[in-house]
Amino acid sequence: MSEKGKLIVISGPSGAGKSTVVFKAIENRNDVCFSTSVTTRKPRPGETDGKEYFFIDWDRYNEMVARDELLEHAEYVTNGYGTPRAFVEKQMDAGLNVLLDIEIQGARQVREKMPDAVLIFVAPPSLEELERRLRGRGTDTEQAIEGRLKRARQEYAEADFYDYLIINDDVEKAAHALNAIMDAAHCRFADKVEWLKNQ
Ligand code: ADP
Ligand code: 5GP
Image (cartoon, rainbow, N blue to C red; front, side):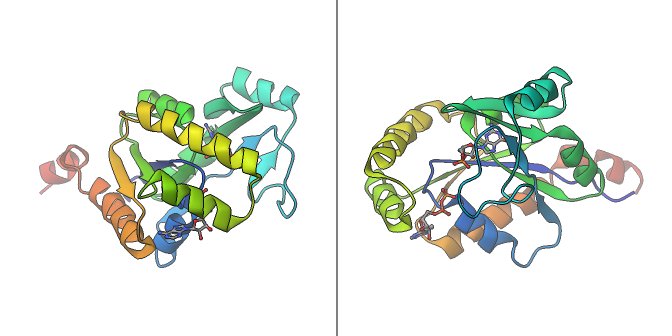
């Protein structure tokens, strides 16, 4: 049987460069897939149902929570977000690493439920640089930028349960680090005990 895939959680302040680094890291890999979350927030212009998110209403969200269909879920600002469990389990069973881009409360639940998951926090080289990137991205209002900077400081104070911290000062270097972490996860001794026994 092929080896099971790993669950890889990526968190970090909005604007740290998570999407940029992840896309760079996986462009030449075929052993990684993304989990698409459900959310109660409305689609932004350009977002498509089933691509960025599955957009659902609160009734459906609460139903999924009640039926334990979400591996983790959290309310962020005023909306609910969650990771559908069935997809993640199916892909991992098929040997694929599954990437979750989720906020810190959800990451904490994953830590508790799936101790083997690899938790990675991506940070910008400084909060000044974070502010420059948010302005450069051009998707946030002045008020939203202030809010995101404040939120970043709070997240730093709570992030001590992650396994790895990648400082994204350079996209290539950060993508290399992410790939190294994923590869190392497949070399854990504890996962290889059966293989050794069969030698
Ligand atoms: P996130 O997914 O964490 O919200 P993005 O990937 O959207 O962040 O990146 C935020 C902005 O910062 C984008 O405009 C992106 O091009 C830019 N960016 C990402 N990584 C770097 C980097 N290492 N150096 C400079 N700019 C970067
Ligand atoms: P946005 O609404 O800007 O797309 O996402 C807001 C925040 O929700 C981001 O920090 C993103 O990582 C997080 N998020 C997206 N999907 C999930 C999810 O399934 N679970 C949790 N806990 N957070 C999520």
